[in-house]
Image (tube, rainbow, N blue to C red; front, side):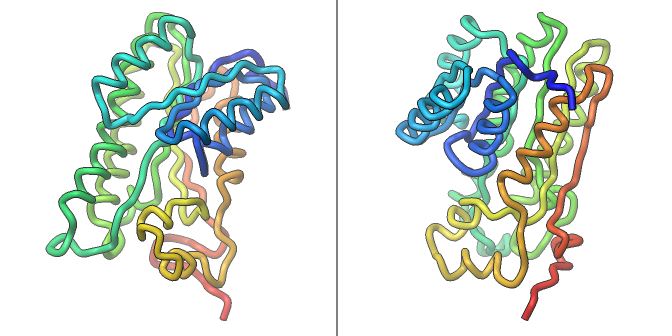
Length: 257
């Protein structure tokens, strides 16, 4: 396959682990320069050093909480003055808890909405403005099957991912007449730190999520992201759903006994 990514610059949110880290590794191997953002400075800086040592690319590690609108405006604004961003991967996101709405945690709700929806908006607003000035760019938003089909206890998380899907559609409409492309990846079960965060370190609950079948890996999602981002300029892959073979939707998950 022709490599159309060589020499481009990609900004990835939530890049310190999981899907964000896997995307960073795949894009670095394709010759992309990187701006990696996240809250865990040590992990970001270690990844940046590793990728620069292994690949002939420049990597910037930027400690950034996407829920902090002022910090995004200031820190990302400085980055955009120095770098032209060709690719934005809005990966930062989380799920917290599995309680029904009448027993839900307000703190959990606020954190999911602030990260999954508002954080995506804060970052996209700045980066898309630069892309519009250049009349080029590619934005890839990480959605979820949860944004298409609600499941018990998913309530607010499902709503935030449905919002991501709708925002991707709206961004495509807003980009009409430009060469900016916007896509969404909607994964099913992926084994990352996702469930560690959702269950706040409860390993028994976390392990039960992935028992009896082979879930997707972060690398599986990164492979799909690479394919989408490497498509020719006239091709805009707007929405993709990717599931483990054992899972057909949130309710149909075949587990081996």
